[in-house]
Image (cartoon, rainbow, N blue to C red; front, side, top):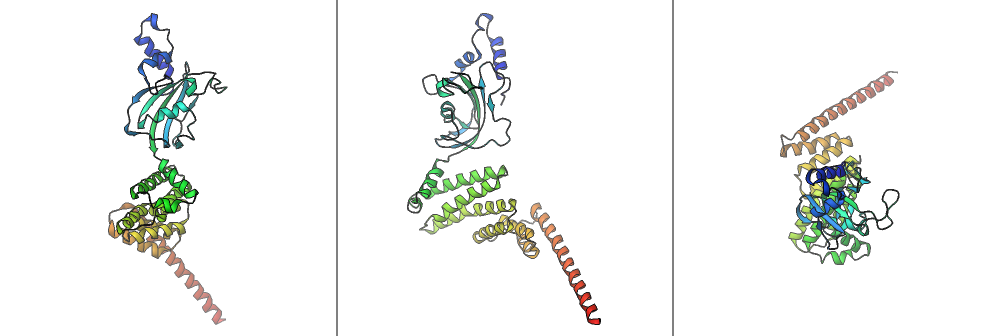
Length: 336
C-alpha cells in the first residue's frame, strides 16, 4: 500500500491524462469523480483500491488497521501507522475518533484497501486541529483492514458480568453464541500472544475460560462442547505462562488439558517443558516419552526429550558425586 508521494502521484496522473486547459482542478477534485458517496450528502467519498473478502465490519467491532491521513497538496501524511509492525487493535466507538473514518470502516471488508475523502464535518471540523490540521480542512485517509473481531457480543457478556446478572442470563443465551464469544476472546488472546504481549493474552484466554466455566450445562452434548472449547484455552494459557516464566502455573493448565484429553501431545509437551523448568527431569521425561509415542517424528518433541535426557543425566551425575563426597567425608571423620 503506497502512501508517501500520494499527491505527487495524483499530480502525475492529472498531467498524463488531462489536457493543459483542464489542469487547474486540485488533486482532491480530481479524485472525486472516481469515488462513491457512501452516505448521500457528499461528506464521505470512497474509492476501493483493493477489494476485501467476507462481510463488512460490524458495529462495535475491534479493527486492526493500517491508515495514513493526508492534507491536500501534501506528500507526507500528518499521521500514519504504516511504520508499526503491530498496529494496535482499535475499538469502534471508542478508539476511532473521526466520525467519517468510523463510518467508512463500517463499509469495509477484511483485506480491503480504500481511500476516503472526508469533508470537515466528518473529520476535524471548522476549527481543525492546530498545528497539523488547518481550519475547515478536507482530508484524505488511506485505510487497509488487516483484520477485525466482532467484539460487540463480548462487550455484552462482560456487561452482564459487571452488573451481576451473568449466571442467569448467560444460561439463556444459545450455546452457539457463547462459543462465538469464546472464539472471539481467544482470537484477541492469539493476537496479543503474537505481539509478545503474554499478560494480555493470558487474561483474554482466562476471560473465555471463565465464561465457559459459568455455563450451567444440562446435557451431555453441551458438556462435551464446553470441554472441546476449554481444551485449546488450557493449552494457550499453559504456553503463555511458560513465556512468562511461571512453570508451576503452566503445569497447572497443562494438566487441566490432560484431564480432558490424556493423550494430547501439545498438553504432554507443555507439561514436559514446565517440568524441565522446574528441574523435575523424571516427570519431564515421562511426559515427553508419552508425547513421542503419539508423534515419533516430531522434531520439537525429540529435541526437547534429548535435552531433558542430558539434563537428567547431569543431575544424576552431580547427585552421585555429592553422595560420594559425603561418604568420603563421613568415612574420614570415623577414622579420626
